[in-house]
Amino acid sequence: MVRVVRDILTGPIEGTQDSDIFAGLTSGIVSAEIDAEADADLILGRNINANGIGINQSLIDAGPDEDQVWGVATAENSVGILGGAIELGGGNDVLVATGTQAGVIDALIDGGPGEDQINVQFGTGVILGGTDEDSLTLSGTSQDYDVMPIDDLLEIVQITGGVDGNTNLLVGQVETFIFQDPSGSTETFDVGEFFG
Image 1: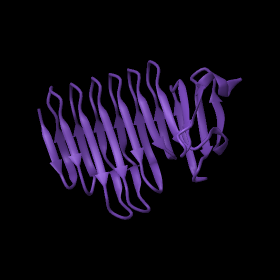
Image 2: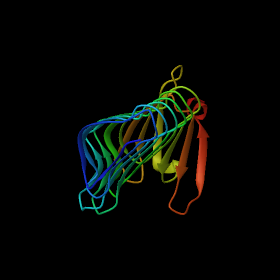
Image 3: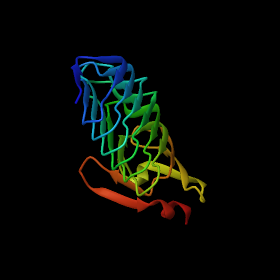
């Protein structure tokens, strides 16, 4: 088991075949290349600074098994995940990206095989659920967003608008869409409903 816990994580970091923990606790994960390898891993980029970014311009391969990736930024004008690419790999994985400005900006998220739960709040980028039944959770109600079908065979949609008005997500291979407003109420849609 590897436990890499610092104020900020950067550079290349290798995991093991066991459950590993990689955490940047106050200034997040910045320009890192994390290869978590096998078993259930926790990757946490947390930024508590104004204008902070939880996971910034990093390449993350979570590997197989049930992993959790969190990009969390809590201060004003903050972003959960900015740029880079995250591969969740095999297993039923969880990815959460939260910030006060956006959950994600210009990020590529690939769920891979498994039933993944992806919550990006709102923002911009590309999200691929991968094989199996995957879900995407966005903040706000379905009326806050415009969902435009792009390809019905591959079930690709473009989601724009959002509570911030700046959301522009290209989403494919995601079967369930969940809209959760601040009061906690949710609306759930099957991807097929957007192609009706």
